[in-house]
Length: 87
Image 1 (cartoon, rainbow, N blue to C red):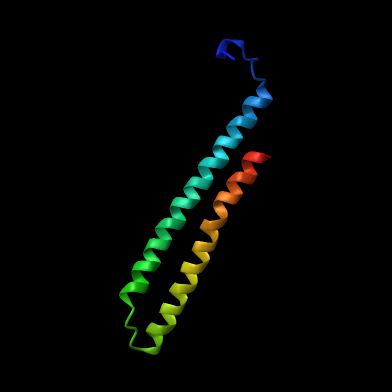
Image 2 (cartoon, rainbow, N blue to C red):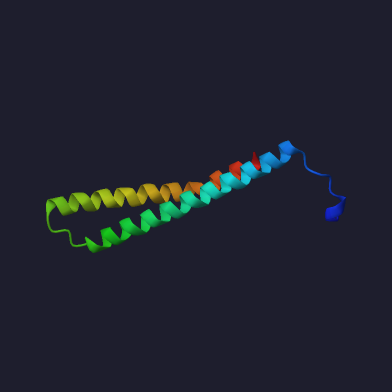
């Protein structure tokens, strides 16, 4: 079907389409923030690989916990994107 033959979109349809685009942009922004945080925590954890003190080991444990949580959130983003586009 040629573009000229398509029915014009109503104002409500246009508003819904823009809402979808904005939601996708927010998901991409969230993903970028999570990737930045993940990179930071991975660098910090790698620099503390030889944690000497108990405080260093505790901090390393916290960093590893953040890394696991961020990876979990990142793994759910594609599922969230699929749900949002299906609705």
